[in-house]
Image 1 (cartoon, one colour):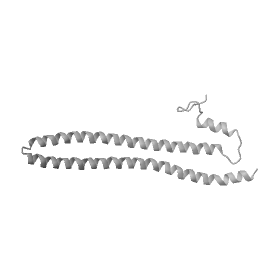
Image 2 (cartoon, rainbow, N blue to C red; image 1 turned 180 degrees about the vertical axis):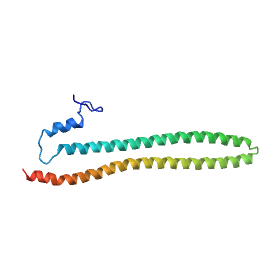
Image 3 (cartoon, rainbow, N blue to C red; image 1 turned 60 degrees about the vertical axis):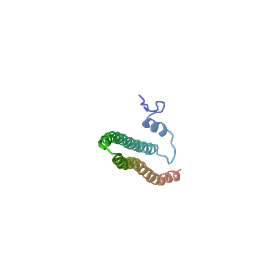
Image 4 (cartoon, rainbow, N blue to C red; image 1 turned 45 degrees about the vertical axis):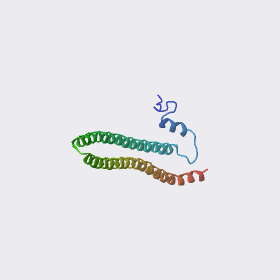
Length: 152
């Protein structure tokens, strides 16, 4: 029974692809090596996607925490404002609380931006490592291709 690709059922799995194309004898082309390299490419993209998704989940989680903290802090600030009696004290307290809220918002934005940057960096590192490996694989296959071409 032929397995099908769950994402694209009309296309066979890698093993069937390799078997199908290995029937065509192309000098200098090792179909198994080609398929294995493409499998590693797909695995690298999948790993990078997983890292990006996990990073996104962490950002969403942190945004939720920030929202809860912000609501609690806003409630606390309103409580503090209610205890102030004179207009001058209200203005001074309001200015101090506004400055604290602004600084906290900037800190939170910086934290979230750093989380996104870290997640992106990790995902790109996986792809970058795979590209380097692919280049090395290509370099290693060039002498094989030259030898096969010379035997014709």
